[in-house]
Length: 339
Image 1: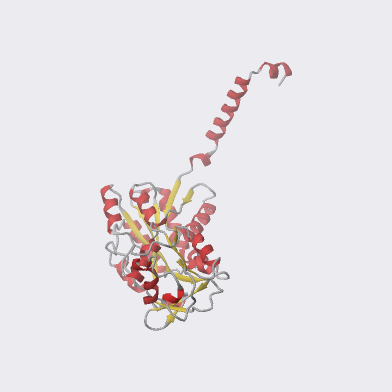
Image 2: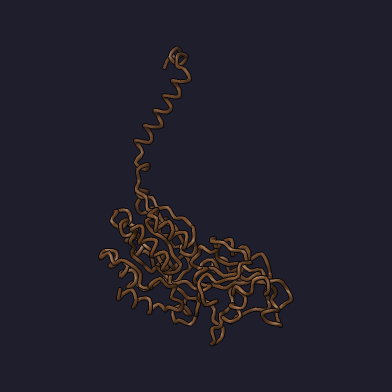
């Protein structure tokens, strides 16, 4: 290019050339037109979804994008029922109100259990007075009437310190909040309000880890990933304290805080090749990826059944709009099989 030509190009011309280059680059880049699988919802289920999404995108060499957000189970269902996402992560079954909202907007769904979680009640490792807690004591701490009145450890048990309890728990849009309150207090969303709440389990982990007088609850994966700075409490449901573990989840003894976790697939979106490919990949690789992120995988027959339901477009839920506290792994399979 000659010097005289360069001198003759105006700033407007330079802008036009640059714009043309950008447009040509965008048009020639196939990544800009990649199909997208959109996922949102539960922070509890997020580690599984993230692991599956990463491996799937690697296998597809970037030909399909997968986005995974965290807005809590309730927040995810709101987006899902507005047809804004293809898949929602859920740490409890879909509720009556969400079923009605989806119905109003014509959104149909396929329910897929993908793992079991041991919802974990954790304390700071420097807490030397508590190893086990009864369901009745947990209810005493978390029920609505405790707000502003039960504020110290020794109000639960006189042998415990005369020190203020710092409470950390899932936010109101979280399925973990719904499940915990139903399992412990006896009614979903029935809780004291004077605690640090978040849909992000990492916030809760950091809160408990930073205060010797703290107590909180969140998914097992977040506990196990941070077990050097947390201590799990054994839950006594009448037969002595039981700690969360693969064994106690499988044998049904970790009650009432052992629970199935789910994805819900938009039935219309399931017709899109990228969504169908993603679900097939998910169910084929779920056992190792669920285990990798420290949850408890289901047997292969569950994942095969999920694919059968996908192919047959089996719509709806087997839970009737309830959280279904206390469901064991085998209970879950029988429900899903008979759908």
